[in-house]
Length: 234
Image (cartoon, rainbow, N blue to C red; front, side, top):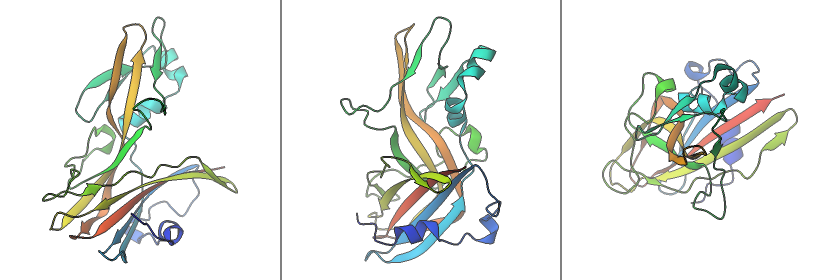
């Protein structure tokens, strides 16, 4: 699906409404932004939505905890999949070596990212969310959207004192009716190996979750592109 030649404008210069502007007026060391572009059946942009993203999940926080935390506390962190399966994880332990299986072009794990998932519900506590409240499934049936292949960056862009990357995914409505989106999340394929017990945890894990500041309606024949921009300022 062609995104068009004005993507930079769409995701960089889009005005953020006052009710969702929040703390954008001052610099932060880390920023995450969610942008959604809606197009009609002819590819014309009919709506632009942009908001600050503030909702890493507990799974994300656990994966980002430094090894010193695990070493000092002697604890493990419980990762929970979208199907509610769990695994106690730590980077290392006295008798156990845990390892995250990195993407490998020679295996079926080409990338961590499974998809940017959309839904029609909302979670009251994003931190504890393990899945979207009401996921919209992939397909062309009633209430469904066609999930296109995610666009995954091959590297990080450096611009003056800012480093950032953008990941995106397109969705097409061929259901014959309108589909309303109220929540968005990032789901990754995580594989962890436990060397002591020879056990593996491979599952879909929700790492990021957002409730939209206003719903997005996607009519039959229309399409959307969802962009997540993650940036760090020096």
